[in-house]
Image 1 (cartoon, rainbow, N blue to C red):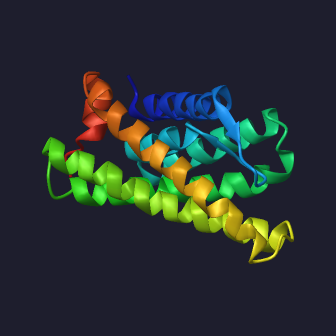
Image 2 (image 1 turned 180 degrees about the vertical axis):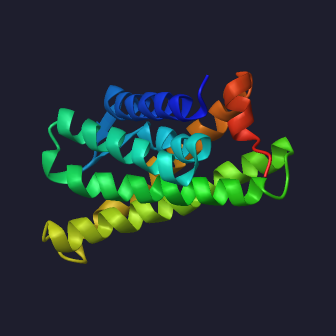
Image 3 (image 1 turned 120 degrees about the horizontal axis):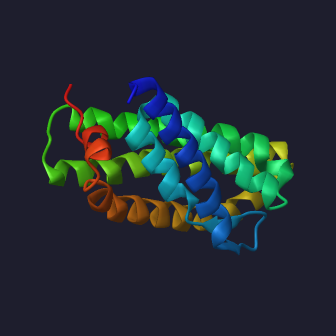
Length: 179
């Protein structure tokens, strides 16, 4: 199969999976958002597709979840924040994998990539809530613990899915790139 076509297909699939994982189970928080499992797909998008295509798939899928779930006011911020999170997560993962192909490093790459992406999610939504939504810097602090929990769920989910995805030959090649 043509490599560009395959990348386009996987990008669309990851955008759809990100949207579904975000919508299927979401727990509203006392703040304005909700906790969900979509951040695992955001991280996996960056890992599987690399920083550029992964950020597009993650941003679009997450934004669509906001639109379909009635959080339209968050959709533009979500597009940017989740795209940046996937870019960071994918970049960190691929930087680590550039130096090793062992499974331990792959898990370390997903955890560190998830932490990098999670830092963007936590700070991005804090800035959005505090300054764009007008909550103010102090009131927006209420979002941070919930975004940290969401980040943890995303890292755990992505790290648990990596060995499963490693069983698919075309995906395995993307998880263990030859630089």
